[in-house]
Length: 318
Image (tube, rainbow, N blue to C red; front, side, top):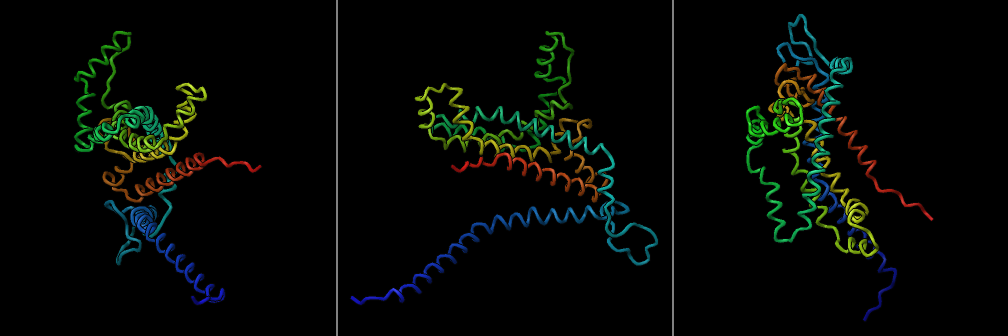
């Protein structure tokens, strides 16, 4: 057996470490590359296009005006401008629409959480042979068209529907005047919750399913009652699922325009409806882009605040 000196082994060892480092870097790029590419193509690039569009003038017949004046043009507005941002901040109406949209999104998220948490907990603690069936029932509404389901709610909430007659009969029994359910903020809220409820149930179920039952048994052995076991054990462990579900509900509700259009009528204009009208109605693309940019910034700010509040508490050093 030939003896190898330590001096000859060290270069080989460094070469192995260097090769392993390169392999780790390649693996990291292979894993993180597709998500980064997705963000660049579907978020960063559209945001930059919207930002550039918001700095341009609207065209004479809608759309966008040319950046440079065409040959022979006598009058017109060309180039870049901050006029749309000045118009946005000069009218408090748009701030009120933003505030109303955030209020609807927050209320929808809270109602979805209240309704989805018991259902997700029930599914997670059911027998394994029933879980897949219950999850299937949760996602079953996605098998039908979105607009068909929303128009079905128009029939349910209509003034001549059985549900409306039943609600007004109950209100009349306690001395309250009849109410119109359709084309109201109530109808918008019902539609938002109905559409986005599965997006709250699924992250919660995924989180709750992974909880170790031994933790609840240990808490019970220490004298904790059912409420204490939930509040001290189950709820803190489920917070990642709560935050994921809240993000999946809150952000889409902010930009939703189909539900307010169909169930809310003309009286319930949210920021999504306003953006849609600017692009498809008045064809003021620069102002529609400005509204989109402001909505994106507001969502990013709220996401950053939520991430800051949800960060784990630092453990003090002894």
